[in-house]
Length: 224
Image 1 (cartoon, one colour):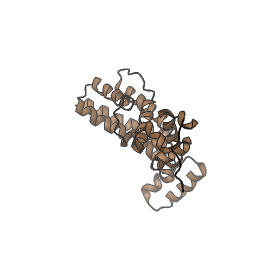
Image 2 (image 1 turned 120 degrees about the horizontal axis):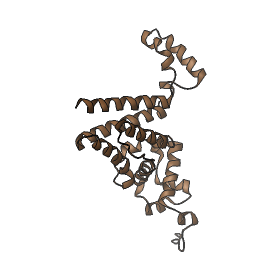
Image 3 (image 1 turned 180 degrees about the vertical axis):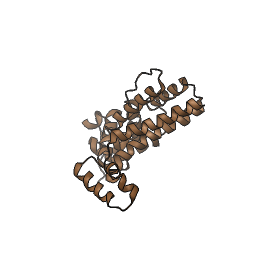
Image 4 (image 1 turned 30 degrees about the horizontal axis):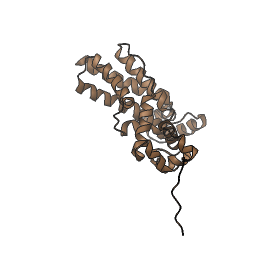
């Protein structure tokens, strides 16, 4: 069998139109459909209709794909201008992050798992650290508070996305069925809370968690 000759001339049209932005969007399509674990150069190449090898001109393998998505998510957050009100400023960042993350909820975990060095990837950290610095926190304390703040917002979002009916639901029929099950559990505390355990409102839970985190943060700074 005669080996095929190397391809000459211009690359196929799809490869000519390749860009980092297009690759990020294609990677997000894979993540939205199948989760982060499904990301590979081949999977993204299939979405774009190109040979996976052509992606290496724009990203450094799978890690490069995941870094690019994390940078995109962080860089596209509409960071609000600081007002000098610690609670209001951190709350505004938390709400801006939620709005952006819910557009691609399966990708939210990348913010915690990728170590980014780009301006886009570090800009949200800079915003939070500046707010804490202006509130009188030392760099060391600011980092501890930053990590707690980020863990709270990411953890709450991941629970909302991945927990399914475990934490309750918004479906009226399912709520009634789950409530009846919990009330018949013969566990007094569970039965008493059945109405609330059976329902789950993502926005309400997120706001509660962030308010709790901010209460703790402000209490710590006040007692210092």
